[in-house]
Image (cartoon, rainbow, N blue to C red):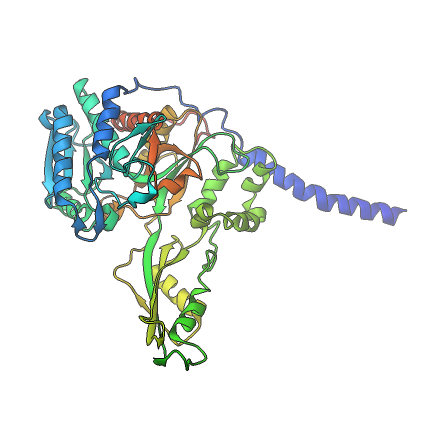
Amino acid sequence: MAIFTGKILSLLMVIIIPLFVLFFRAEIYFPYPNGLQICNETHEPIQGDNLIERFAQAIRIKTITLDRGVYDREELLKFAQFLRKNFPTIYSSPLVTYETVNNYSLLYHVKGSDSSLKPYLLCSHMDVVPVELDKWDVDPFGGIIKDNNIYGRGTIDVKDTLMAIMESLEYLLKNNFQPQRSFYIAFGHDEEATGKDGAQEIAKTLHRKGIKEFEFLLDEGMFVFSDGFPGIKQPVALVGVAEKGFLSVILRSNGSVGHSSMPPHETSITTLAKALSKFTSDAHINYFGYGPERRMFEELARYASYPYKLFYSNLWLFGPIIAKIMSSKPGNNAFVRTTTAPTIINGGFKENVLPSEATAVINHRIHPMQTAMDVFEYDRQLINDERIELTIKGHFVEPHPISPYDQQSFGFETIRKSIQQVFANTVVIPAIMVASTDTRWYLPFTKSVYRFSPAFLTQETTKLFHGHNERITIDNYLKVVNFYHHIMINSDRKHLDPIKVKDEF
């Protein structure tokens, strides 16, 4: 009987002790922050019909970028004239100087009264990607307002942030805004083709002006999501503190030539197809827990309901399970690994002629835990076929360094505060920016680089990016404008507010 009782007690201890550890971590290390994410300090919102109409007019200007150096120059000039006409206070203020960079990009300097404070930089871009006209329900460049939505290419990528920056500055200057901290505004004209003609030239201009360091930089990026995180009832704002790298690899297979009536065992196309079949969405290593996504889930743990709170606060145990779940959805999968997508394939020219070669392009977005050469070598080992020749296509971009996101980070905390003032009761957490931005050209100027687009989205509406029927709700656009209004006000201080509670995020 004593032996049986001892076994029961031992079994209970095996169960109870791990459970105690799980709940202890959940409640002690990741407590709910007692409402500190709800910010009651707000400023008078900017709104009005003219604001919406100006945005619609901006959408009607076809600033399309097709490829490197291939963009509509006349439309870009028209857009610059449009800004000058619609924001007269900015262009006439003694506090603002402005210039055109490399013919089309725009750079503004708003002078502050205290030269001891480091300036900050707000970025956006004027250009948009092409459209497939027959796939749209409305004119993509009509600036159509329908069903409380503003339709058009650029409504969420990213003429919304560009126009919001200008609307906010115009409003503040009209109301006698006298900043103490200087700031710059940079609008590139070819971000959709890597920004080499636009943002890169703006960066060179800043260097020539003697600008050595920005307090922080804010560019387009992640959004406020109202869904997508199990166990979280509040909206979640993802602020990109790192950016994935970019690498395209060309795969080439050579084969025997001749008549298709006498084919070899494998043609160049067959050999290439076998290699391509290995490039699935989970082909590369899952790095969940090694990058910013770990902090992302640990911050979510503070707001999660049970049992999710247990999972998020105990990644030491549940990390592999969450990593597997994250891999199952394309949007989440992009957070945890280098993504892999075959995007172009070519081979053959006539149905009865064996092709001498076949080629394909694999596009990678590189996780911060890898380098471009790591990915290239991994591809080689994954294919494991000497008949496949691998070469790097064009340029590649290494993943960006991880920017600071602690409570002492002026940039991150300023963005967090501004988000909470505009998006009530929203959780703000660091994340990885899965696409590319112009920030690559400004990395020498600051370690505090953040990527955030201030609008509500769902997992479903992310498909509007570079997609058909791109649109933004009127309320969403007003939030974008007011976010930048708050950014300009909140950045105009010498120091962060003191931390009053230890658990404040």
